[in-house]
Length: 102
Image (cartoon, rainbow, N blue to C red; front, top):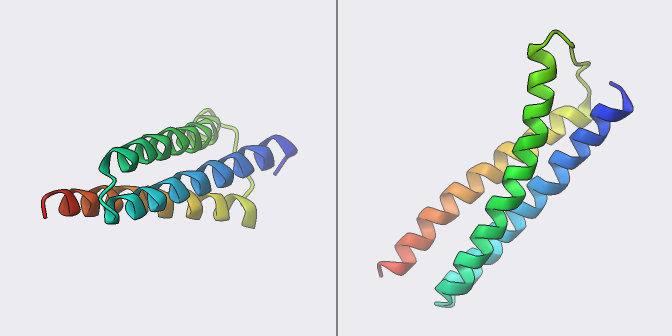
């Protein structure tokens, strides 16, 4: 994998980590009854997740256009980070709805 793809992998990891962190902060705020702050944090989580997803999409387009990617641990790790942060975001949104409807 070249340096450009390593950079894309790191972009995915960093933004996915931010997305996950914001989502869990939002959950903490919702537990405390601060739903407005929770919504702000969820919005920040979505922005970070979108940045990570955009970076992943760049890799997918390269692959689709015939530029085969060399798999390495960094790329696999970045995909793992993205998927777990996306799942956390989705589940936390549902949990916050449960807190709101209590």
